[in-house]
Length: 151
Image (tube, rainbow, N blue to C red; front, side, top):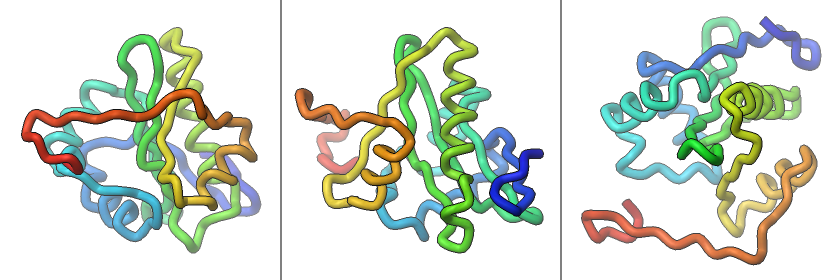
């Protein structure tokens, strides 16, 4: 357990049994885009494949924050970093992110990327405030086997 700005919040690994609670958190969070990959089966497989990299913050039994993290073996990737509105500005997101970064470092991975929606200025300000740098020299391009652009 870790004390985060006057509240005792437990940070533990995100596991497949947390699915319903984290989906509810993500759906309630501005700036978190849900896709087909966030359905129960693909997300559970992701958590098993990337065991020990994703975390939740728990307050009195309720999940109030999350970070989803994976790796391609060379770089880490953070997704769905979210904290319930009732628990923001307590250091929870920073602690969750640090746990994922530390877990990546334990695997010898020292660089991590994330994507932020272009119009999500609050998220951009948060990431800048904790030392992340915007990359303006690259563009994200995506492709899905189904051909759907937003899958």
